[in-house]
Length: 203
Image (cartoon, rainbow, N blue to C red; front, side, top):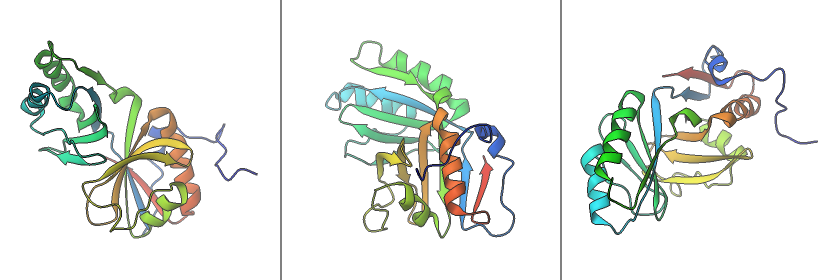
């Protein structure tokens, strides 16, 4: 029998999960970042004008080292996805203006800007048993010396494709996943953490 949670009539939409906080002292905390937007950026990493235009608009430079990210002001993040692809994460209220400015600034460059905010969800996972929980669903090595703050990686998590980011030296991570799989991931986490082990809140 498959060890994956069975989704169906008992499955919850992401919004309904926000009222399922566990009382007591949970060992894992999951925050649904409803306040973040996501923008996919494609361009030439060796094009200095392209890189400069991104930094001028966002205030953060695109990371050129594989599987790393850069932090900007106001919870802005630029994450490396590939040699010519990045993900920008920023507060939702900044997304429309950012996308418009990027498209204007890059109108004559070989680049593509796509707002993915409606199709992605980011979950922040922390707590003393967060590494144990994440390791049950992902083959990444979460040891603090192997996966450190400033790193990110695309991987599978409980059979869902995700982008995992190490946010600090503490056991604190973010998982960005397609919105259609977010309910599944939350269901899986809840089943693996146990009835008193996980709390779900929103920002």
